[in-house]
Amino acid sequence: MLECVLRDNPFYKQKYSDLLIPLAGLALRDLDALPLTDKAELASDQEANPPYGTNLTRPLVEYTRVHQTSGTTGTPLRWLDTPESWQWWLDCWVEVYEAAGVGPDDRIFIPFSFGPFIGFWTAFEAGPQVGAITIPAGGLTSEQRVEKLFEYDATVVVCTPTYALRLAQIARDTGRDLAASSVRVTIHAGEPGASLPNVKARIEEAWGARCVDHAGATEAGAWGYGCGHADHMHINESAFIAEVIDPESLEPAPVGPGDRQEGELVLTNLGRIGSPVIRYRTGDLVEMSREPCPCGRPTAWLRGGVLGRIDQMVTVRGINVYPSAIENIVRAHGAIDEYEAHVRTEREMADLLLLVEVTDSDPAAVAKALEEDVHGRLQLRPRVEIVSSGSLPRYELKSQRFRGITDDRTTGKG
Image (cartoon, rainbow, N blue to C red; front, side, top):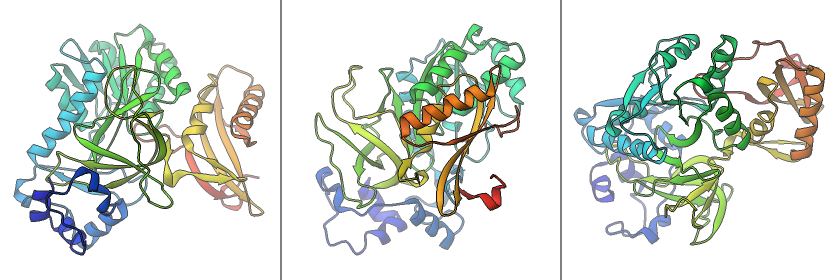
């Protein structure tokens, strides 16, 4: 890959131009001699060289796909793929499907808008490559999607964990029992969640199906998948080199045989030569292990999948809080349909406010139980406020339930 990139890719040729190390024949053990790449750097390159930037190893005429990041953490990146790199993407998704036991007897239902966000485009096109019937469900309302998955006798559903719970709520409200459908596997990506025990349990209970986590990124590729053992998510090391770094010092945190290490995940993709990322800071907090996994796969795995986003951590009363930790606690309370979290500042102090919708229960009792649960697990006492059913936003793709730091004077909350 480096041979092609160093010869033909303007972005990395410029990035590595001042390195005082020989790049020809660089060994894997020397990878950390290369500088890290981050999203801000790629965004700046696209802004200076619109619309696609200079991270292009092939002539523009050879690219046939364009997608973009979701934009939830800044300016969206536009990303091009050649037919070869697109097939590499699909091969990565074939790994996901095979790990989930998906094959020719399946009918994969994908309730996705099919817009410019890469989302589940590759999941859709990889379905036929494992011999499955692949059902597009864009351009439909959530109610129509629930009806269609029954109509088409779907056996696999691919969506965000948030949307799986939303469809479960729609089915319940319309008198449909998803657990009675033919769906036997749900595969989730787009946000952390499906490896969180309480989120996973709620999805599996609502759908009567096995819940499988998957991780990927528009600029990197489909790099991780659940193996079925506990909360383990394996890294597809046939297509990626994975590292862990200290997010503060940016120094490598090596993970040797039998070791575990927590930090920020850094990826190098090996088959996307047309638009690669080399030592790319994903922004994902992970705990990587090279201990043997009971599933028998020899690859590195992550405990709990993606634990959270480095840039989404907030400190409340001296406690570091990640949205995924709040999600896991809230989803243990079955009476809570939807929620939203705000970190509020009042007189220079930060507090956690949880807005929750409650169904078929005593709202005051639910609020009290959630408050005690958060306090018991995070040593942080939130304020829990009951809001009317249906008043909080619902999401098809990545959720935005964690609103970060706001000021009471702007939210109107006392």
